[in-house]
Image 1 (tube, rainbow, N blue to C red):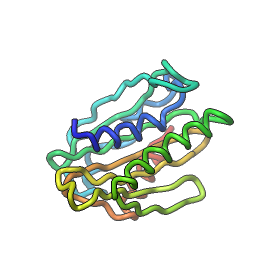
Image 2: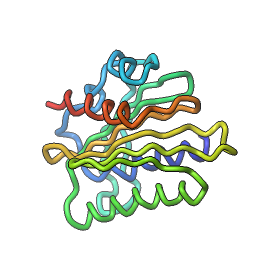
Image 3: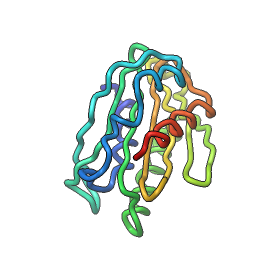
Image 4: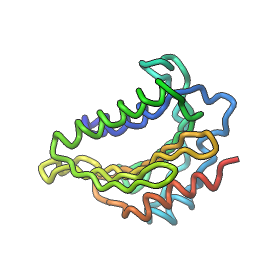
Amino acid sequence: MHPYLGHAVGLLVALTWADLSAQQSACTLYTPADIETITGAKATEPHPTNMIIPEGPEKGQPVNGCMWGVAGNGMVAVSMMPAPKGVSREEGIAKLNQVYGELKAQQWTEERKDFPDGFCSIMTPPPSKKDTPILAGCVVEVKGILMSSSFMSPTEKLSMGKTRALMDKAVSHMH
């Protein structure tokens, strides 16, 4: 795995704090047609991502997510979990900010837009990192659920509007 892709996947892990066993499967939040309509890229069938939180107050908890391959080497990913409270929430935000800070220190640029329910961000690698994927994603809290969605591609950059539309499509499929 490319080291910067590892940072992006780390970003997804940093957002995951709680057990999702009683929650809706993340793979039901998009269809391949949803992804193609928004991103313009043909999507593969979904692949569940069952991860375990590696550290922090929720260490050992399973994480429910899903990924779809798109545009050759790209991907769409989504996860959802009960929104953390108190110290867990603050630690999660600190980890997320740390990942963004590390990328910015390596000359990545960020386009960010805050919304009442969360934020969306597009992280673009420096020109010297030609094989490094662009990461566009959102993190929102809806009905006590923390959700993240992301689109990564080495060649395609989503607009902020499409980045938010991808998140809104996932939210629309919540039970």
